[in-house]
Length: 160
Image (cartoon, rainbow, N blue to C red; front, side):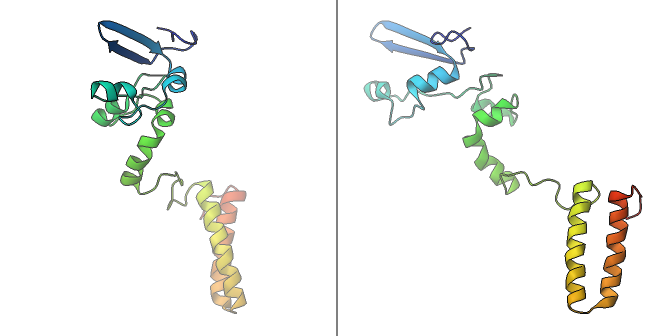
């Protein structure tokens, strides 16, 4: 069903308001719904103040139709767009589960190219410190390890 307002997008929000004996229905896409009604809550809902019951706003993914309550029930999102649609609600959950809300990559694995470059940089910094402190035996060992990683990265060798 197309949005009754813009007549372009798929209607994802169905709003039914009954005033007296009359029933008013509107079928809107997410953009039109938000531009017309905004985020409804119990404080900003005039109809809720009249009837004594707040109007429940169900945010729905415009691509797959998944609601946040579907995610809460199953633990699964319907598509990639759900991450954008439910971002504000998902960030606290992701933070509780993972401790962070930003992806930082595969920390701790040094076998991929990014990890090898990270390890190479750390060894080069250790080498500079060892040379400044005149620890030449340590510097020699660090230099061998730097050479082995450089050969793996730039020379195509498999020793590391």
